[in-house]
Each structure stands twice: as C-alpha cells, then as structure tokens.
Image 1 (tube, rainbow, N blue to C red):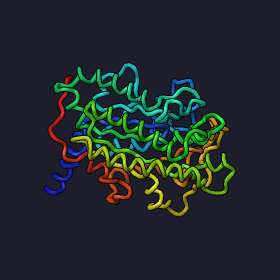
Image 2 (cartoon, one colour; image 1 turned 135 degrees about the vertical axis):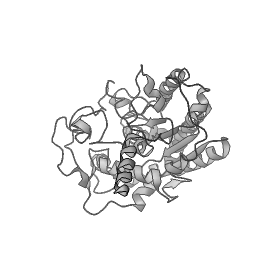
Image 3 (spheres, rainbow, N blue to C red; image 1 turned 180 degrees about the vertical axis):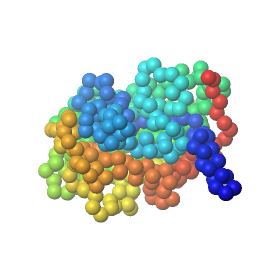
Image 4 (cartoon, helix red, strand yellow; image 1 turned 90 degrees about the horizontal axis):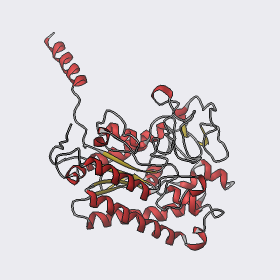
Length: 357
C-alpha cells in the first residue's frame, strides 16, 4: 500500500512540477522547413495558412507550417523541455522572447535574390536583422549582459535549399547557372553563410546546430519539374557539393571561434543511412498539388498521412519531421550529427539564467 501511495505522489509531482528546459532559449533560422507562420502576412504565394496544411495540428488549425502537423524544430523544442513551441517573429513581442523566437521564412535563402519570383520572403540577412531587434528588447529583460544569456541558448539554422530550387536551378528567372559553376556557386553560398554565422557569434551565440540540405533532386517537385522517372542527379550533385563545403565550414568555425560549439546535422547522410520503412510512399504527395507544387487550397489530403513521406511537392509530413528531429537530437552516429548531437550540444549548461519579471 505504501509503495502505491509513494508512486501516486511521485506521479502527481511529476505532472505538477515541470523541470526547466535544457536551455533558456532557442532561436530558429531557416526556410519553409522551419517556418511556423512568418510568411502568413507577406505578399507571397509561399504560405501555408490554409487547409489542408495543419490538418493534424492541435485543433486542426493551419498555422503557416508547411506540413500536416509539426516541424523538425517543434519536435526539438519539445525534446529540450519547452512546454510550448517557439513562436514566430513579430514586430511587437512580449516576455515570449525570453524563450526564443522562430525567424524562418518560406522561400528564404542565403542570397537576397533567392525566391524573388514567388514574392516577398525573409532571407537570412533579414532574419538576422529581426534577431538583432529581438536582442535589443531582450537586454531590458535579463539581469546580466544579454550576451551571457544568449551563450546558454540553442541556435539552429536550416537554410540553403531555396538557393538551389528557387535560384540556381531556375535559369528562366536567375542568371546564377550562367555565371557560376556548381563549385563556384557553393563557394559563394558558404562565404555568405560564414559571415552570417560569425555575426550571430558576435552577439553571444555559442551553441549552433547547422542542418545540411537533403537530396533535393529526389523531392516530388523536382522529379515532376524535370520530367524525370527518379531522382535528378544534377541537383543532388550540386547539393552534395554545398554539404561538403558546409562540413568544412563547421570544422573551421569550431577551430576559429573561442567557446563556440557548432555541429552539423547531415540530412543527406540521414536519408542514406536510415531508409524509409517499408510501406512509406515517397513517390507521390499526400495532398493534391497546385501548379507551384504546394497544396491545392481546401483539398482533402490523404487519409493515412503517416504512410507518406511528402505532404506537398517540397515538404515532408509530420512523421518524417519527427524522425529527423529525433536523429538530430539523439543520434550517436557521427555521420549524421558531427561532432555531436543536439542533446550533447545543449548539455552541461554553465550557471542558471535569470531574468526580470
């Protein structure tokens, strides 16, 4: 009987007393794979604030996430111990910014011009400008210098796909392919990326998880656009060139920036080493596509969404996002998370952050 009472007390305490998150805040930069609503009010075709997006999100509400439920970063925030997902950036934000902000934007890239043919978007420079505005407000909310607060936080950056899909491989809109070889173009992207990551470091950021880009030639939109029967090798080779240089950049920043911890999450290696389970459909999409490969508004999605890899022509389903997040957070395989996974990256916090109420 006593054992049952102790168990019940333990259970109640476990429910009522929630531990602090592993990090005080989490800042997210990226594109539509990470966007949670930043594009909703932009003049762009690239938005997901209409059904069937969000069909499995709590309440069945389309929030601006380009999937049926959660993003990779939504899952990571849960693993970190946050009780709510990280909110999208707004011009006026209150105490929520103490937990971090999501700056990601659909069709945004490393380069300013990327995605311009689709309308407005928040490319990496603009995301960092929004971050700078955020930390100006943060410095009035924390007791210590704001950099001391930020160096305990997690930063994830998942960007670069659009610089290929909505720039380099759209020669009808962009001159990039005529101006740069794939190797030169990857060098240009990495050079810009290096500069922006250093900017974040200067503000106090120290813990970075950088996502490589996946096998872009294997997503439905590219197979359809190129009238291919399988993966488009030319696109995958260009993406692989970028990923190789990104790995070198992560190694370089770890060596050059005192106190910084960068880790690379390799989506292409994860795809190679963890093939989809039998029965998962990766050839067709869960929703009916309109001409730009997003979901046809108010169309009925597939019923068995956990059996589809892609929700629309570009974006994975919730079940895939959950698997990627789990690997990024806890995989021991250094081919996937190198030199550490996100759990290891965010362990051994020094000191407890304090803030004003």
